[in-house]
Every structure is written in structure tokens, then in C-alpha cells.
Image (cartoon, rainbow over all chains, first blue to last red; front, side, top):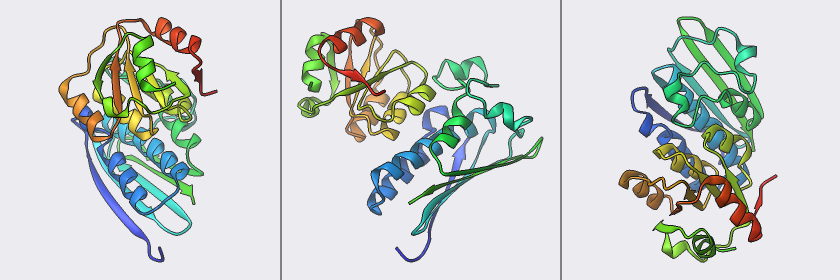
Amino acid sequence: MSEQLTFTYTIDGNDFTRAGEASSSVKNKLKMLGVGSDAIRKVAIAMYEGEINMVIHADGGVITVSVSDNDITMVLADKGPGIPDISKAMQEGYSTAREEVRSLGFGAGMGLPNMKRFTDEMHIDTELGKGTTITMKVHL
Amino acid sequence: MTIREMQRVLNAQFLYGEELADLDVQFVFSADMMSDVLAYGSKCSVLITGLCNPQVVRTAEMLDIVCIIFVRGKMPDENMLALARSKSIAVLATEHYMFTSCGILYENGLRGGA
């Protein structure tokens, strides 16, 4: 693989049952590209948590995944409410999710910590009322 | 232990994946919170849960889990089973509660991932 490959997905914020389709598609594409299974699992988990977050908190968004020789980069951009306190949001167990989200198995305050746990680099750029862009990298 | 053996000891129904029944599994994770499964279950190939929605199958898919066991009599709907089929994930359902299901599998030699 000498040139960079890029995939873009628009995430529907209104359909929880379809959340994860983009992550599933990326997982399959990486498998076809011959990426190692450990790296694929890390990307799949981190992106899936991000995708769920977009549906829960931000009414959807856009995910761009780029694959190069050295790493896989995921950029998750939404126009949601923004994150008021990033350090709190990064604490395991801290959640602002609604009760109905918890009943679906998410919103336990593990999303962002999991995204950090399974990636080698993570950067959060957020502005209240404007949206959030999260950039994550998994090294190959 | 194979998926078929798990089905037998849990007195479970095979909802999908009879052709996967001879797969051998060792490590199991159990939770109703899918975020916990994603955080701590990545070394496991079986998921035991009482949560019943499509994100259970998606979560299993992300972790390369080969078998989902629904406890407390929870029954996945046709959409969930279709998703599991498309990802080749076996699906069992048992009337046992989660604690009992875990205990039975532990007694039979299966372990948690950590």
C-alpha cells in the first residue's frame, strides 16, 4: 500500500439500530486490505464507541477513515452540543447520557475512555454549541 | 469446550449457527453494558448477556466474538438473528439467569478473559 486510502461515512443520528454499520464496514475493508487483526479490533472498538456517541449525543455526524502504511486515522466530526468538560468526560463512569440510552447498553461513561484505551493517539477538539471533532490514530 | 457443549450444559436453544457448533471456545465475558464488553471483553470469544438489542450483535462483531448467549429467557428478534447470521455469530438462548449460566460454564472449565 503506497498511497493513502480514505473512506467517508455519514452517520444518521436518528436510528440507534443502525449505529455501528460504518464501523462494521471499516472492519471489513481493513480485513480485505490485509491489516493485522489486533489493529483491526482496536480501530473497530474505538470507531464503534465514537459512532455510538455521535448517535447518542450529537444527532449524527461524519466519520473519515484514512489508511496509510504507518497508521489508520479516524476523524469523527459532529455538529452536536460540544463537551463542556473534557477531563470529566474522560473519567470512566462519568456520563451525561439519558436513561433510555443506558437501557440500550451504553452511556455507562466508558465511551471516550475506551476510545483512548484502544488507540495510540487521540485528540479532542470541541466547542460548546458548535460541535466536536475527535481524531484518533492506531499505529500499524 | 465447544458451542454445542455449552448449549447442552445450559439447556439452551440454538437460535442460529448449528454449523458453528463444533467451534472450540475458552474465554467468556458477561455483562449487560455493551461499553463494558468493549472495554474488557476483547480477549473473549463468547458473550453472555441479558441485553437484547441489535447493538449486542454489533458489539460482538467488533470483538470477533463467535457466540452470544442470551440469558433470563431473552429472545432476539428476526433482525438481530439476521445480523448475527450475516456475521457468522452463533446465538444461544437459555432460561437460566446470568449468574447461574456463568457458574455452569465455569464449572465446565471455561474462564473469564482476565
